[in-house]
Length: 120
Image (cartoon, rainbow, N blue to C red; front, side, top):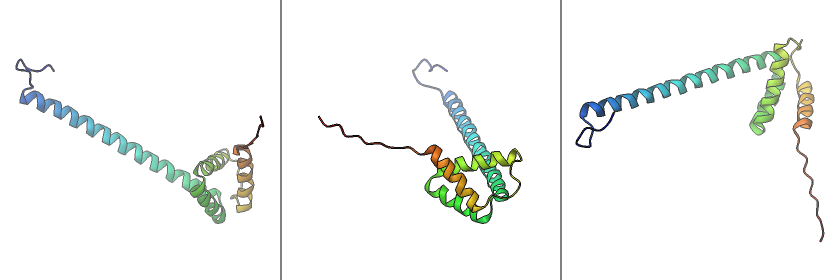
């Protein structure tokens, strides 16, 4: 809407602009809330699957890892959930088996640093 001839908006125009902005803010808020709920539902599903496929000791170890290295814990969780969805797990993963999986993933994701000193 263009400003009225006097260079300002009428009360009706301002009210319409404010109403559009308010509706847009409401729409954004609802969208964010919907996304947050979907994310919570997805996380609850992941945790339920992990409860079924890990022994209590293994779950505790994974929770501790998640506190220190959340990216590694996420990789392990994704790997285990993938195995479970493919039907490749016949029994719950024990703490020792989880340690082996962690060692394997650590080897794949480990960054090696080399420091070389060149003398002039």
